[in-house]
Length: 582
Image (cartoon, rainbow, N blue to C red; front, side):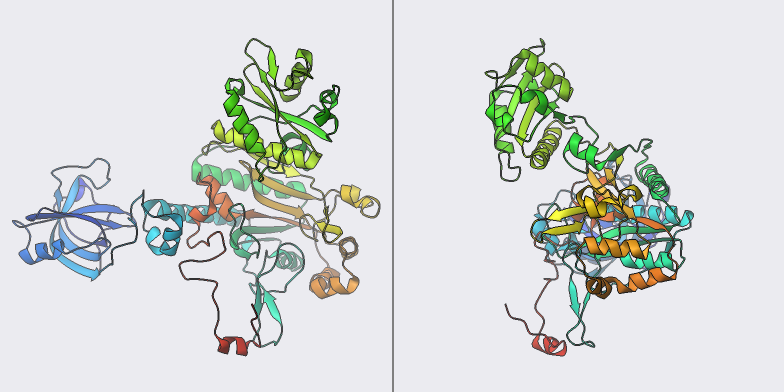
């Protein structure tokens, strides 16, 4: 056997034992008459010692030739370490080596294999197999595995059945772009990689499976903004004979389970908030509620004066930044420049300082008196010492801009704490959203989402105000899960396709298999999918999902390690009856 113990397990109680270890050379220190080597594996580091008095001369000479990341096997005796290291679990002992075998030599790595490395992200992605040897990356992957195990344990305990669904499926026009795969056996035809197993999990409910889940790869051919990957992982779930409340309850319980098991955090509150409330209070549909700074609509009284910018705006809305009144004029000017950046897009910002003595000082004192500014303070919940920041313009655009400002101020003030967890459900999303390019409505979630029963009649008269039986689970300002009650009635599904602009022929061509299945007794069903990568990164207290993916793509969707995507040769193209013109 290559080892009797791993490199993290030996302690003082093992002194005088004969052991065999194997691993990588972390570093070595050569004093001529004595060599120390730190031997590393997944479990830890053990110090080896070779000296001219106690070690064979040939073994000592061999140790002097070891380089970083050589893979070696050693045999020796556990002895007490003279200079103990209380920062290492194995720091009380070392191995006096009497046999050394080099299993594999290594070139000098392009960056140091240390917790704090000198390698940039692109370099580390190119040599990801080396990056994985570093403690932070390895621990992230182990953490991801632990979360996956807890998910499986919880769902199995609730009688969910794990089922694998196909990876080569049919392309559909809804949602993001599909990745397509040419079929050699079916000339001129293509598979698509699934954006989600949506239709298959519904078919499993028609098949009577009742409770399904899968930790599954999904694929979207879209621009990689906001820390996204072209391939990502979902915890995909579906249940039969349930209503919205049943789904929310089971996955609320699962989220509590994960927070307790993985982080030892007890979370009792899962507030509910409608989509409209989220947009009005926070300017987005995934608000971070770990801190306040709720929006205050001051349109009614801000427009009561002669300030033209506010009078011409559809919405005048503000937030109160805690202790912001202490900001200098230079700092506030910097904040105004920040909101005017193209990424935010505001034309400017009005502000009012709520002084500790109860008075106000604003950038628009010419137009607003102390009583007016007190109304702003009341609307935003401002306290003495706070800074009231005001944006105005078109309602939706202005809310989005103020939402960006709110998050930026929370970041600067240290209010987004990685060890705090604040989940909530956002419900009652719009069923449809208008697309200016295609000049028609699109499904906000997907075409199988059920409208609220009381809103079905509005599909013909007021489609933009039809609410969906849909819900998102938000954690710390990130959507970690989303789902809906599904349409299971063929007539309602046909009506939905009509309002999405499908002709009967197009609907049949794309989704005929699902429509046919509904002819054979479809149960009421609903489901939810968690973004597993995002969930793990939040639980792990980090910002980027790439840190928790073994072999991630870069911002251009490339795997720089294996150099993919890449061209294929002419013979392969010929077999597929394809021709590339670029």
